[in-house]
Length: 432
View 1 (cartoon, rainbow, N blue to C red):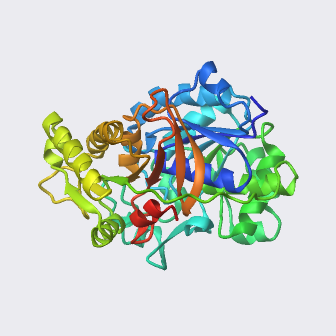
View 2 (cartoon, one colour):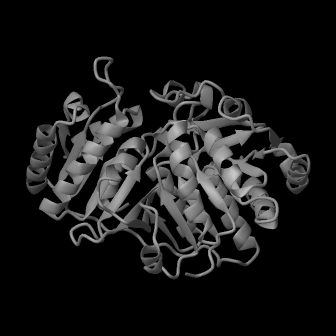
View 3 (spheres, rainbow, N blue to C red):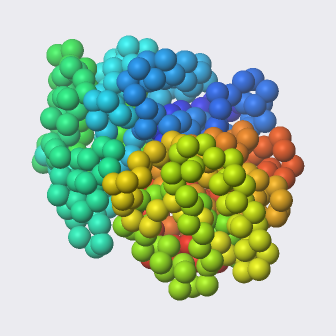
């Protein structure tokens, strides 16, 4: 394998493909593994310069993290990559009991040592960190994260604190310095990093408001990889910062011309998202001629094989008739009478997807929802994903690698609940 520049662990699958998109746009060939890679799997991709592993830690407990993250980090670290990035969602939603980013930070630092740079701001996604406070765009308006119309009311990890150091203080005892925007703009990012490291602080949080601030952080990260840190935490802003640093140093070529995706006649959408954004997309798809199928959530959570068989049979039949089908567990927030069991719903929709792909031979599949994507794709029997083409920021088209011929070469889009314009499903079918 070519000398690697970078390795990452994605705490969900949608965020992992976001990193693939950033790397592709930066001219860095990469592969995303869906299981811990062995030597044989690694040998299939000799020319990549970055590798990742897609996980579902975002929906897991600290105890689960203690058991599963150390071997994952060890496998990625053994690749020889100088930087291991724990990739989080750019909304940084997490809690002490679910998806604890603080616990992941502690585990990574214990394994790899050094100070931990944290970079959450991702201007390319409408996410901004200024003076340690996180802001995120929604509906064309930028909101402080604790006043965001969706994230402040997230059903599992509501964001009620905008200061990210205070947010993390609920999850870790790590002492976290701040590199604020005014100091970064004044050219002091490296100095602040040195000061925090020399004081023995466990982490440093960098503001990120634009490309210039990310470029400044990227320069710092490249200057100190291996000697002062090996483990970083944050959104795809970390990836973008590194790409800007690599390009400035001549390590990677200028941004390449990207291929375009073609249209397909048939598209299956599997949605477990409760997001209002996805609800609007389902309604728009219905207007665009998509057939929609409502899943019985209680039956899926109870493990009903009959309901999975009904969904697969109905979806396959509608694909033959209309070519465009949305199977969804919700259209907006679930009612109080039905538990929001994301893992069970996502896994069930994944099994249904695999059955439909095998039976119908469709070539493109869209998962909507972070948990749906993570738990659903895990049921598909895939080995790895590679970036294929851009569609919409943060939700690219990717190509699957699998031992099973019916699944090898399948095109997927993994869309977070908040991602995409109202007509996103039709955009995926058209290929842009």
